[in-house]
Structure formats: C-alpha cells, structure tokens
Length: 302
Ligand SMILES: O=C(O)CCC(=O)C(=O)O
Image (cartoon, rainbow, N blue to C red; front, side):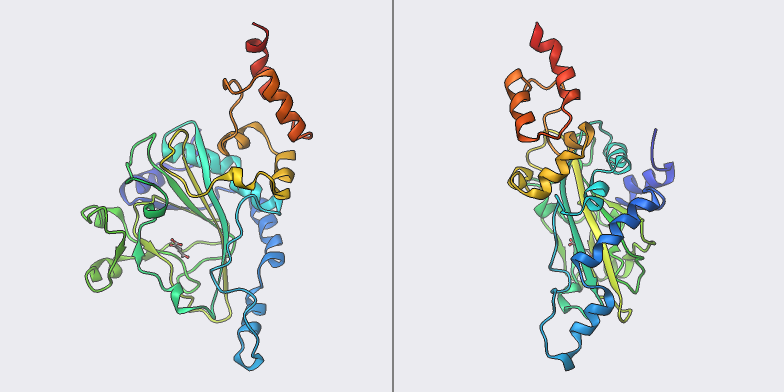
C-alpha cells in the first residue's frame, strides 16, 4: 500500500519534489527532538554564545557540524530506517529493494554565517559518479526530515520546479543569480511543521538560505535512498563505521528489513553459508539471525 497520495506522487514526477506531512508518527519525531539538546545548542544557547559581548568562540559553527548515521541516539537511527521512510523510498523510486546511502543531522541558527546563503544547485554532483536518470532502478531520493518547524523565516530550503529547469545543461550544477535571475525569482520555500518530510530528486535546483527570524534554530535529518546494485550512486561507505559502538548498538536492536536497506546481504543471498552465519553471529551476538538462518537452511542441507 502506498504511503503518499496521487497528487504528491505527481509533484515528485513533474516538479521533482514534494513536501509530505503526517508520514511519520509524532512519537518518533518527539523522540528524535528530545535528543537534540545533547547534540546541539538550543536556539537560546547559540544566541548567547554568539553575543559579541561575551567574546567567546561559537560552540558550533552554524551548519557545519553534521553528525552521521549510525548515530549514538537510537531515536535518530529509528527515523533513518523507519518503515514509513523505507515505504516512501520504495514508492517514489518505484522499486522494492532500496538502499539507504546517506544520513546526517544538521542544525542552522539565526546568528549564522553568510555562507548559509547558497547558490541554487543540484546535489547529483556529489551523489553520483555519472548523471541522473529518472527511471525506476536508476533514480535517487533525498529527504529532509524536519525536527523543528520550518518556515520561510526559519530557513526553509528554497526549491525550483523541474518544470522550469529541465533545459539547463547537465554539467551546470550551480546557477548564477545574475544569469538565472528568473529561477531565483521562481524559487519557493519548502515550509512545513516539525515532522514534515521534504522529498526531492538530486536533479532539483534548490538552495539553503540564512534565517531571517531572530533567535531561532532549524534542525533536520538528511536521509537519502537509492536502488540496490547501483555502485555509481552514493555518498559514504557504511562499512567504515563497522567498528563504531553506535553501529554495534544499532545492530543489536534492528531487523532484517532495516539491515537490508543498509546493505547487509538479504536472507537467501548466496553470501550466506554455515560459516558466514556463524561468523556474523559471533560478531553481533545479540542480533537475531533467524531470518537469515531460515532462508539459508534449505540451501545448506541440500
Ligand atoms: O540547508 C538547506 O536548507 C539546504 C542545504 C542544501 O541544499 C545542501 O546542503 O545541499
């Protein structure tokens, strides 16, 4: 069953982006919001640090600090591989075997650097080694999961419809405000309350902007999915986190669907032998390997 309406799906196809409300359960968003103060200053704390009279350095440099998956906080991991997020990836990408390939957390504050004012750009320049192909099996999905209310004044990302940009040469990944003044004039803020999900294609021109509201903060999770077996698409390699405590803690309480979207060989994959099952069980003693064992048992006994 689909998790989005026909109109939103049409916006994804025609405009390249859509803003979804009510996709994620409020308690999952609240749990993620509850861990934010341990990771980032609140808006008030940041404003106090930014006060020039205090003559102290900022504790965080506005938008630069971006913790990545696997997070120490389970509530954040839970959102990244939430069933509704995986369902959305399957639906928008038109596939049944999505892979999560990027997840990080960002904070943005009012008293921020001028560099928060970005040029209109597309993300495929650092999400693929080639160029995007918008068809099932090849396309990518980027999402911002809003952990605070996001308005035009609190730096809602400005987005331009694909209907206006399809003719731009593919190698032009940043747009000059002078040459493309019409597109800067046509950008719209992707505003939505906490819990909203901005879903956009990597070929959608968009840009971050400075906050104009005083004393405010914006928090969001950036999560990206792609189809399996697309080595040219991606952003970071999860095996690099294989020694992290956060990864081991995550694996202890995850499930087969979540591990599959993270690149674990799925149950029934030829990778699984008696030896690899025993080895993975030794590496992750608390992971319930029954789905992998059950799928392999026929193959192992024949
Ligand atoms: O912060 C934002 O609103 C957008 C960020 C963005 O476009 C990017 O990092 O590529």
